[in-house]
Length: 445
Image: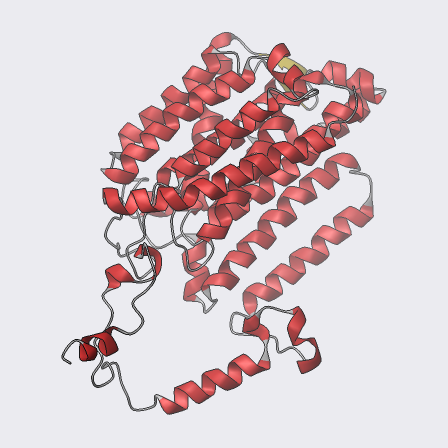
């Protein structure tokens, strides 16, 4: 069997294209259906923004799995394993629950119950943890009850970790995409590096997950025109958890030991997945840390762990002075550092260069955190190479506009009415009404 790199790339592109093309019509449908909740105190956006982006992401998931099932090499994943069907069944349930929550709102305990049911459906179809490798003890086989409980716990934790971090434009989809890319590298190495067929489903899941996030990101970057909502955040969380369950509970460490040449080498290879909960903690460590801190913070205040607040990590980045885009990029940086660092360490954990590189990049990340108001200025000859926000001409024009508008206050210009919020930004279906005042004046003639 040849290495199906091109088939993986085709699956990723199809998933991303379908998700991207569906997001526009889904956005119009969400506006028409009234799936635009009022702005809450903990929200950072200023205009009502349509949700239900998970509808497009679920369409991309179905398209990616459908295409992969007809490709020469990847169709063996569907022939030798029932895990793709188990993933699709659980994803459909969690997606329906998310759509109901985005439109009408669902109680937190009901959502928790729905997440457990979706995880249980996947377990019934074979997507479950069979054994866990424990250092110093070896491979421990789990009873059906133990495997079910551990699988459900892993799925619920991962879903809520992604859901909790979905607070800024492009944050959740970007962080999950980074985690999925690192996860793909790890799973692909197990499958084609050591010939372990049990790692094939996890490799496919990570590629489809990347496509879902890449296709949705252009619509969700700041300022977002649509939110993924719970229908999207819970969906991508479940796909990530399914990959973690597949590669942790299905790959036999004893077989890996035979492929790598010994138990010690197998132990080194399995470093990121010693315990099933460790895998999602390494690839989405920032969302999980945010989840744990939120539970501790709310419980300490005597509130429900599911109560909403403005104490998440991304909210704190905004409070200390970071812009919306920079806060998102910082969260991207830490997610990539932890996820790819764990993968690099699993490849060669005896190399000091990897450890030193992680420490150095961590220091860079801390410097970025301590300089919230620092904005680099690019030389004029290199302005074409950087985004407009870093160009000197932008600041000059901004200062000129600020000087011209000085003293104007917040009142609208004479003879012009402010454009209603329902016609602007994320809530606009068609073109914006840029000359409301002029058209009103012309109507008197």
